[in-house]
Length: 610
Image 1 (cartoon, helix red, strand yellow):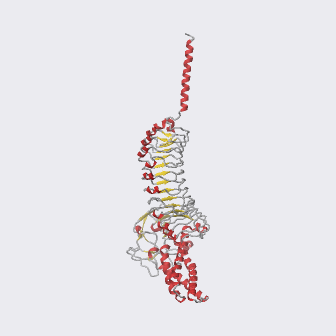
Image 2: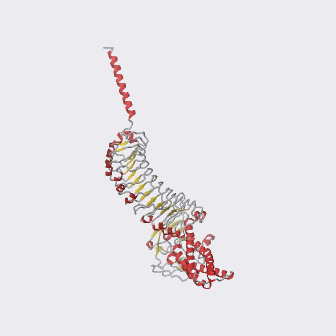
Image 3: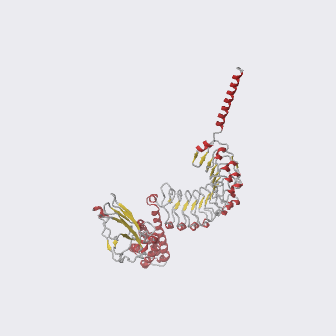
């Protein structure tokens, strides 16, 4: 008895030891417990990427609150049926996995909206049940070495964004029309040599990306088989494209066109029919010039011509593009003319003065070309030198007024002087030479130095007089401020406080500003302002023949308000700077416009000297 007892004791100890060892090994083999997984979550996202997982841990499917599950870059070979238990799942990321099978039970994830199966070279089919996912809007199957679409992909009728980039696709099946809600189709880095005809069946498509494919149009036979509602067409870096595919003018709502680095040599005149375009990217091409029809793209805000080293000029009609913006530092938006060494516009001027300066130069050039053409047609073939004064006066004045007056008002007024100086100096001299040459050739006459000088003085006088006509005799409306009719008679109130030690700056309508120094008023009050309609105003300001209204009419209340210190009122005006003979006065009325008096003001020089 005594000898057996120790044996039992030893045996029991061994059993206990073995049990403990088994538990330790089990814990080491399966660390993916509910508790551990929950500790890895950030809000409702569970990130298990790059964990060397061969399958999705079963405990994952017990965490019902998971909305985003990321198992990317693991050797996971399938999406298990247990995925159905994640009833709140909205996004599944499974990129970089050798997944060959996706369980049909995924359709039970009723709220699933995004799926990423990119970098999965074995994925060849999707479960048919996925078509039940009513909220599925985004699917990515990029970089999967696909030569054809996975089975059942085209049956996902709710998908709005489909990324098929970095594959080996050369065509798309007619069944793609089943993607009835598709808005964004990404086909970058594939092997397309043409635009698949089946794309035209995607009636809701707004954005088509086909960067870095093998598109070719050397024979000019490539057609834009795209829906009419397309807004963005991106074909960047198709280096053998050479020419713009036909049919752009048929895309009714196109807003952005990217043809950068496509070897483009010319742009067709038909581009002017796509007036909805807001952004055009033509960087790194072989363009020498642009068609005049660019002037009809009135909504254009960005024109990127960077790196077109052969580009030697811009069409004068480009000055019509009032919405064209300056290039922003660090961005390729606006008018981008970097690295265009053949362009006649100097780089330093573009950088310093921006797109307004470029448009001003083009406006002047357009004026010159039109005037010269009109002179040639209406005068040179018919007029001898004795009739030069009367005819040139009439034609030049008419041309400049008709061409420039509607354009000048859209350019900052500081540039108006440059336009007319250009006309007065360069255009006058060129017209003189052309008229003199043609007249001598036609009449067989000899224009001596005296006659040449007299003619030059005559044209100079005509040009100067025309400038005055443009500035002073045209309809008064364009000389007013920036206020639009919808803003007339709308009052705004600005508070003026006595408890301040700094100058108070009040921004009023029509760009006006009232600066009030501290302690200029004894009580808190408000300044109420409104812009009055100059045409419907009962108490119209009666102007003399030598006077012009050059700003909006500003009403300020309360009437009779006084300040104990001088205040500063800034009123923008729009009289062209070239009219240096004019002086500016501020007229005020305290009886609703029945009588007006000049306000005593200080010039900038007088203010500095005080």
